[in-house]
Every structure is written in C-alpha cells, then in structure tokens.
Length: 261
Length: 113
Length: 147
Image (cartoon, each protein chain N blue to C red):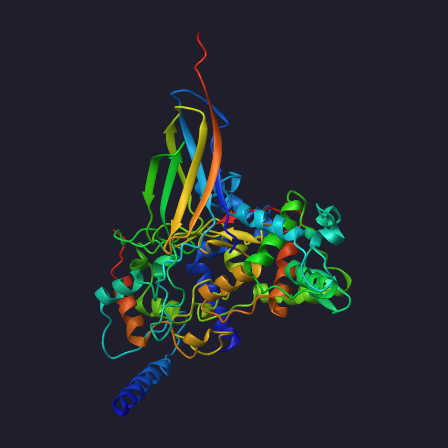
C-alpha cells in the first residue's frame, strides 16, 4: 500500500471511528497511584496494618536488616544504623546512576552491590523473598516521600531508551505500554482494571502472586499478556524502562507496603 | 520462607462480650497442581490443613483448610469472653509441622450502671 | 521403545506443521478486504465461540451481546450493531491488521505474522487466528445488527 492509499485509508478510518479520537492521552491526566484503580477490598487490605500481607515481608526485612552475613562480619545496620535514616531520600530516587558501572542500577541491584562489595556476602537472587524483604523495608521508610528519579546528565540516554521501549509495540498482540497505561487507565480488559502503570508502589504484594515482587516482574507479566518475550529481571532493557516509568511517576508518593490485584 | 504467624485480640473485654480474633499466617499454600512438560509436579503440595484455637486450653474454634485457600491466609472469627487468660491459635501443615501464635486477654466484670 | 520414538516423531511433525501456519493472501480496496480469505464461508456459530473464547478473546476489550460471559472489557468500542456499521470486507481488514487503518489502535492484528517485535517463542510465526477463523468471526459479527 502506497503512502497516498494509506493516507486515504486513514482518513476513512478516522471518519468511521470517531470514538478513537475521544481517548485522551495521560499527559492530560493527573498522575494517580494504582491504589486509585484498585477495588475497595484491595484498598482495605492495604490499609489494614495487621492484615496487609506485605507487612509480613517488612517483618522479615527488619530481621534481615540486623542479620550479620558475609566475610566482613557486617549487617545492613552496621553501616546504615538501625533506621537507615540516611537512605530515606535515596530509596525514592532509584534507579540511580552508578559511576563505577557507568549505568543506572535498581534498588535491588544496589542492595546486592552492598552485600557483595561491603559485606562480602553472596548476592541475593532477583526477586527472592530475602531481597524483596530488604527492598520493601527501604521503600517503606521512604513512604510518603515523592518519587524523584533523576534523568539528567548521564541518565539521559537510559531515560530515552526506556521511553522508546514504553512506546514500542511488542508481541503477537502488538501492544505498547502507553496504549493501556496512558490512553486507557480506568478501563477494563476483561475483569482486570487498567491503571496508569505507575510504579511508586513497588516492590508490591500482588494478590495473583501471593508474594512481594519487583516492578520488573510486573513488566514481565505485561509482556506475557501481549504474548511478547519478556526481558530478564534486572536486564538493561527493564532498568531503562524503570528509569522512564519512575520519572513518569515523579511527585507521586512512595507507597509501601502496597497491595495490588 | 520465614514462618510468621500473627494474632490480634483486644487487650481488654467485658465478660460476656463477643470479640474478634484476627490471624495471619505467612505461607505459600502450595496446592501442588502445577506440572512440567513431562507431567511431573513442579512444586509438591504443602498446605496448612488445620487451624485450631484454644481459649485457656479449651478448643473453641476449628477449621479445615484445602487447596483453594489463598497464600498467606488471613482468618478471623469471634469468641465470647469468659475469663482472663490466653488465646492460642495453632496451624498444622501436611507434614504435621505445628506453628502457633498466642495473645493474652483481660476479661473484666461489666461495670454496674 | 521404537514405537514410542515413531509416535514422538509423528507428534513433532504434527506440531511443527501447526507452527508453520502462514497468512492467507489478501488484497485491500479502500478500507476493506473485499474477498473472503477462504473458499468455505464463515460459520457464525463457530465465530461466536471464538469471540467469547480465550484465544481470540474479543471480550477482553469489547462489550458484546454474549450475556452468559461475565466481565466484558471496556478498552475498545461496543460491538452491538457492528454488523450494521461495517461490511464484511471492512470487518475483514479490521481483523486481519487494524493498524492499516488506525496506526494507534490497541487492537491486535489477528491474521499477521510479519513485522511484529519480540513475539514470544510459543507464538512466533503464528497468526492469532487462521484464515477460516477470521471468516467465522466475520460471519458472527455480521449477525450483530442494529435493532
């Protein structure tokens, strides 16, 4: 089909599909946490400090914070104190540029950097309960603070790469992130309500998982739903996507422990 | 998985009052029904099968759980306050591994009015 | 043992022939594919089953007069009366590859294998629906007339 024909077809299509033009992009919308789109039952579960299942991970995280591991004989608390107060700002600002590696790393990856380089302990497996417990604890301490990932200077190319991924169609269903999360938040895909795809609440307890998982694990789920081959947790692609999506959530309050469907 | 068992009861209730016991157990509740390409079970079944509640040693609540109970199960039930003492909740898994959580309760006489 | 091997080979052969399913040729006129993709006419009853089923999953995004199924999606337009609004040929193009008429559409291309990015291995080289299934869904959609 030539460009002229294509244009003609498009014009006809626009006439035939007036509804398509009525969908507003998210830029015209206020940024909203996924909490807004969750059912009242899910919101109630998150709001109840006793029943919130994510709080079980926090409990484990508090124990792990004090646990001495590795050749250096240190725990997280050895360097960062019992409350990790100095980490509160930083926990709302990941992914952050790591000068030594020359690329941004996630909070999960930072925890493992600490373990390997400063504690002499083994890295924890991606999305393992142990790693999610510590990360959730850090995020809970930053709860209420605005998301504030930097995309300036050396972060810029990673932001651009993530943005390209956000707008790139993938999979047999040929879908891009923005189509659901910028154009249709609040709508239903079968029984599931679309949110803006904000990640101010990760790592989060997902009822479907019965466990706490990372934003990357959630990205994988989206990719699978589009019948696309997911990237690995912690892959450069998902780190870049997280940079873009975290910046998109800037100003939204960090939410932890969050519960989502 | 770190085993965590939680219980919550009111600190103080009046004699005869109906109060709520809330519990939360950290558990995968693995139904063991996921199979690999060769029809081998991926993760063997591991469920909490029974939940019991003893009020000063007397069995006052009992539940049997099956594979449809969610992971990290939250259970709440009501009891009538009779005397001060201890509420003990016990979870029993497929291998008869027993875990418990306990909370004290203070029962006071109804103020005369 | 040998018997098992033969069965395995037969099964593999069968599976790979299903994998190599290709797309039927078609011609576009304006915003339509006027000619059916198959010689057999579409079957509206099979089409309704596909629309309600998990594989085509039309209900994922569209509300349709399929009352026995709960939770119709709202991400796309209602399809009640769609058979009065579009011809068979227009529906065919919208099903085969809707990006040809709306570059921004969320609707998947139901009969396309090329030009897709990072398709999961299980679906690689396979269209969502076969040519016959496309015709079946069209036959069903054409029954959805305005009152």
